[in-house]
Image (cartoon, rainbow, N blue to C red; front, side, top):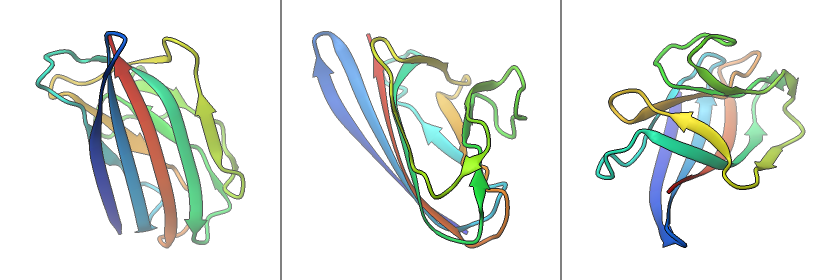
Length: 136
């Protein structure tokens, strides 16, 4: 069970701050939860998710239902789930981009969001995730 998270500020354009998060999963289980730490230096907890990309690169799972929440251990379809996909075959990557202003996301008090790829089986699943957040 491993994950590698890469954070990179994309800077500011037209008065908006951009933040990119890349996650690489290797041999993860169905219940894996990843903590995403948003920049706390801006002092704001409200961001917009502009792009969500996930590609399964290996493993035994047949389906997934990725979701993002603002509480560690959040349940699907709970008040803390900010975005969630219906179960779908892992063979089809999810490549969503939303028009301005994107999907609203508000972090917990520690400036954290939580991503669960939600594979349906196995402990050998691999994936690549790319998220783009913005804030005015």
